[in-house]
Amino acid sequence: MRRRPKRGRTVLLCPQCGSPRIALVAGSIMGQVYHCQKCDYVGSLVFETDVPEAEGSGPAP
Ligand SMILES: [Zn+2]
Image (cartoon, rainbow, N blue to C red; front, side, top):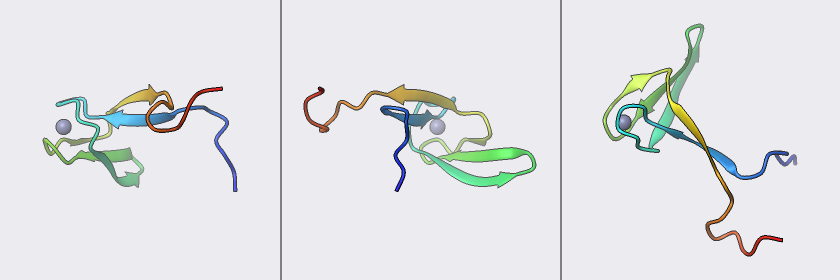
């Protein structure tokens, strides 16, 4: 198994309502298409934000 070298993780946010409930629908020649489960936004443009590993992962070294 491989671990990502990058720390923390990335979450996707809906550009319309800001919800993190974004699901990848399909990858096509147009690119990836995402669907927001909250406002039903569908599109290839989503916000990406880094979330530091803080919640419930124990004390930092
Ligand atoms: Zn949305």
